[in-house]
Length: 285
Image (cartoon, rainbow, N blue to C red; front, side, top):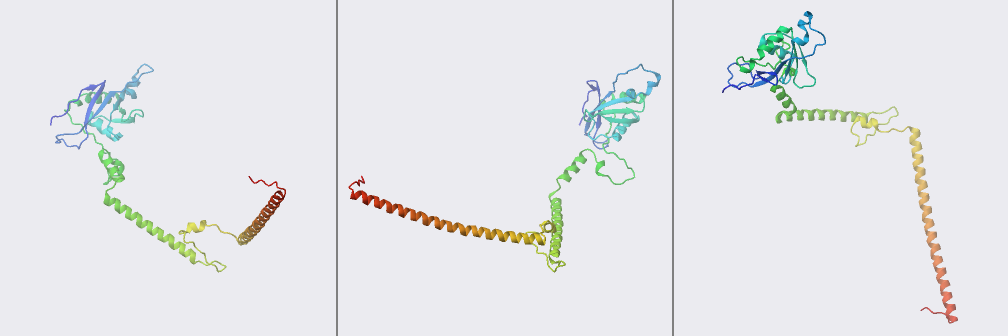
């Protein structure tokens, strides 16, 4: 497969393709990533002097479209591979994603880096992007934070969505721990129910309270409050009963009075009709 073709520059930016795949010169189809470089431009407020030879603005290169999770170690290895120059610092741009300023040790190093970068688009030199940082060379293990590139996101995905058998083991372990905790709590409740206080009484535990926290949260009344509560309850019941009996008596008396009133009015009407008949004044129609 023929290698891809890159332009020498785009909108004034130098095109610097790097290889993201493994560092194997025999790889027939490497994966390329394009970085855009440009000499940092700034405005001087004073005239240049001999002391400005190593001014930070003259030894700064702006880099855009950097690979994701680019670190200072990546930038140092990249600059060293391109032009064998040293990097003093790397400052990420807070406003542009995956961009930042590469500050080299001096002005000549910056010029050499720019000059060598202008030939990278020809792919004569295979520049590899080492996306794995190694901050501790004495350690034989790789921490999760040192994983970069697609391996990092693969690990995060597997952690977020584990396989079915692994998820089943996690659920079984969680339910086993939950059952053990529930059994311990139930044992605590039973031990509370078996305790005898100084007065010789045992705690009565309701079947709805299945934890010691529920028992402790139950409202407790003092002896005086219990006596007062019983007296109040008894008084209310007696008073309610009296009202109820008195109300029934009133109903019977009221019905009796209504019945007597109806009978009296009926008798009065009969007397009126009889009197009208005797006087021949009764005309029902």
